[in-house]
Amino acid sequence: MKLLRLVFFALVIRPVLLILLGVNLRGREKLPDHGPAVLAANHNSHLDTLTLIALFPLRDLPRIRPVAAMDYFLKNRFLAWFATNIIGILPIDRQGGAKEGANPLQACEDALARGDILILFPEGSRGEPEHLSGFKKGIAHLARGCPEVPVIPIFMHGLGRALPKGSFILVPFNCDIAVGDALFGEEDIAAFMARYEAKMKRLASELHLPVWD
Image (cartoon, rainbow, N blue to C red; front, side, top):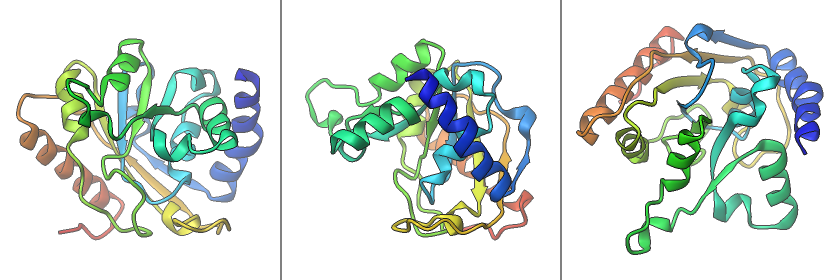
């Protein structure tokens, strides 16, 4: 399976995303060269995850784990096999918090303890193309539970047009990605969320994009 994942990203994803779409990356030096770490990005397209993974050397594939909803990606046998073995998702139960005493972020914390790099989308799900939805507080709770782990804000623009939600046809729009300085968790959830949103607004302005309200 490791070989299949390597071939998929080397011969399919990298040529399509980094050449056909023409990714313009700012702040590459701010990407982590080792784990544990969390990449916290905006989310408009299934291409978001693939593009973020493709930014790293192929040797790092085993330690890069996109956090994904179990109820969506494990809903049928083929999708479950592809998502877990080729994309390498870390499936989480979105209903886990409803169980008494359960920690819905336990799988994420365990992965970080192993030194993995997580990809997480604080909006929760894909929104309308190039439109930012509100951030959910899960990222702040994860950061508070793992205060020594850097949370790296990433703003992406263009992938929502290249492959918007509900579309299966790839359109060659250029993609801009800006990587910000790392944040670290703190006890005050609201304060962390305010700092994260401010970082994302700054990254959007660096790409000369309108800042949302």
